[in-house]
Length: 89
Figure 1: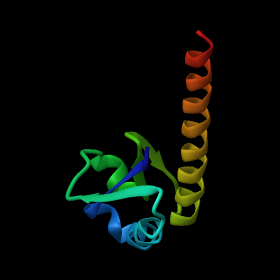
Figure 2 (figure 1 turned 90 degrees about the horizontal axis):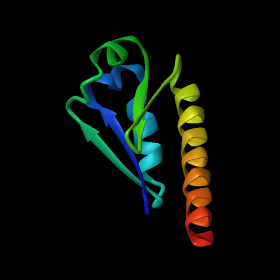
Figure 3 (figure 1 turned 180 degrees about the vertical axis):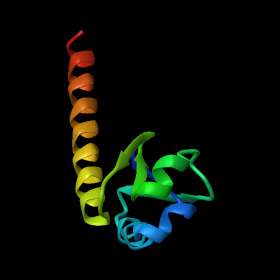
């Protein structure tokens, strides 16, 4: 299953447009841009996006990328652990 990464078009002034283009090049990700993700307070204040429905925000785009990658790794590890648990049942 591909990781879904979502961005808000209104957040692009923070530089998330560059990150979005970079992530779109990865075939393991489904990257989607929406007109609004409904997180206006965060959208105005700092770079943010969503990874599989989880809001990820940071002070800089570089930090946002790091946090997104960590969230992806954690979500994958959690899925694998759940799969092992189910297999053991």
